[in-house]
Length: 51
Image (cartoon, rainbow, N blue to C red; front, top):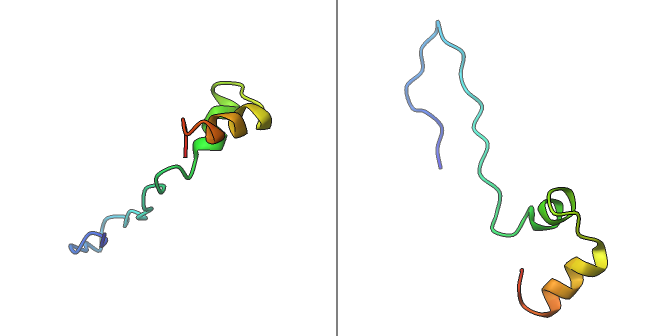
């Protein structure tokens, strides 16, 4: 995705950050929000529940 093609000298240009890839933050979400351990996450992967 490209940045904003319109540039105005009096305004700040927003920094473009692409969205995370599918599954890129799965481990962090499972750990930080759901309190899962590494072994829990691996079991979910082995079962095909998460990628």
